[in-house]
Image 1 (cartoon, rainbow over the protein chains, first blue to last red):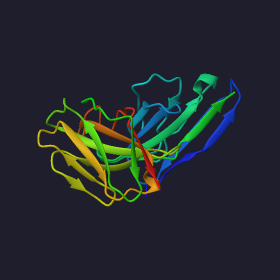
Image 2 (cartoon, chains in turn purple, blue):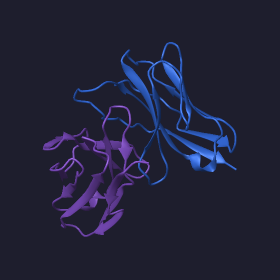
Image 3 (cartoon, rainbow over the protein chains, first blue to last red):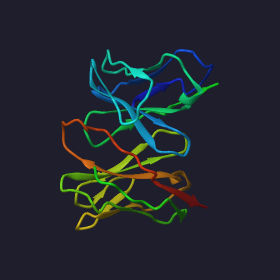
Length: 111
Length: 115
């Protein structure tokens, strides 16, 4: 079983609020990723990190930001949430190239 | 990374084998075939991967054609819990590089297992 956790599982918030989606893994993986997925649509990579103090933007442009201060923690922040940010956000990690472990996701709704 | 083509949907009777095809005619020599699945509202789950030999694990079997231009994921005895979107992904393997671990998910195949 994968030991990667995302909180909250569901979040409903008003426009303009600052939010942080949490992602933690206890497997000692150095590589972590954030994907975004709209209902019935493809997953898109928005951020990734290859280790502490390393963050890069993914293939899909996103107004969110990430940080990687500790190996096990990779939070995603939206400074001012908008309805267009409504989506599912999925966190993943890996040590090797072959196998990504995904969290259960955070379903974000911005009103 | 090579592009993959999968049927948008498939049906399977419970207890029967589910055979999910994937075409990847532009695959190059150092690219692996990965399979993931996503059950509704959950994060994707790794199933299996291979380079050129057939592979089997506790979840499924992966059959790769000799020319590596296509592959088939086999769930030998499908259950209702196998209903999910199945993604076939082709990408270079090995350590390092700027694409390390990054996966491009397409539309996948929606597999529905019927009682």
